[in-house]
Every structure is written in C-alpha cells, then in structure tokens.
Image (cartoon, rainbow, N blue to C red):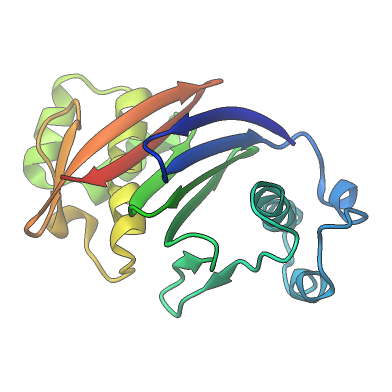
Length: 200
C-alpha cells in the first residue's frame, strides 16, 4: 500500500489517497488487524472487498492508533471516535479517506466508457443537455463523483441523484442539495479522479 496523495485542507481536516499494491493475503499477517476484524472479514466473499476492508483499517490505524475501530451507522455512513467526520471511497486499487472536524464528502473514480451509460440515470434533464454539448469519460466521471460525494456528505441513501442534487455547470465547480450549497474540487491522481465537496 503506497500513499499517492495527501492534502491538509486546514488545521484539522485531511484527505489521503493510497494505491493498493498488496492483495488480501498480504494483509492477513499484519499485526494491526484485530481478531474482531478477522471475524468480520469472513463474511465478505469478494477478494477485492476483503482487500479494501483490510487496507482501509490498516491505513487508518497507521494514521491514528492500533486501537482504532471503524464502524458504520445504520445508513452505512462510517465513523471513528478519533475524528468528528470521516468519508471513505474505494475504486480501482485506490482508497480515499477524508477526515477531520469539518464534514467533507469524497469519491474516487477512474474515467471509463461505462460511465457514459450511467450518466442519463443520475443527471437531471437540464444537466444531461449540458453534458451532451461536450461529452467525455472524464466529465462523466466528475459529474458522477460530484453526486457521489454529496451523497457521502449527506449520508442519506434515499436521496435521488437526478432530483435532489443539482450541479450548476458542466465544470461542476458548484453543486446544491436542497437548500445546501457546495464547492466541488477535483484532483487527478495517477489517472483516477478524486472529487471532494465542502459545504459553503
């Protein structure tokens, strides 16, 4: 596991990205993995998910302490006692984590052709019309990442991407969820796009 990116947004908020260079079996002997985490691992069938599960916890323990416990609310939103807020995303051998006193929604994705098929499902009619003027896998990735990041920020799986989240421009530098406004930021890291949103 190799750190690919770190940004300190302010005194108490950080964003980290790691590239996974190990497999699940490589992590099994890591002393940072607790017995409780090994038991939870047995319920996961996918090797990819197992690797992400272990790598995320090892990364957090290396940042904080070996007693850290990553838990989830009923909504699926993660939490740790070491930070007021935490947001996590996995994609294509990368793990992104934002944490600190301020809530930050985060997503990491690799631009792919299949995103072009997903876009009509998540964009409003107006947003899709704008997208069609200059479509690309990178823009699709950014639009998807924006809506995913706001979902992570809000923590409500029942929100509707098309109706509840509005992206103001194709640059997607601004977005809105109901009456909440967000600044949207992008970083290109080794061919994957990190998106994060901060409430204005």
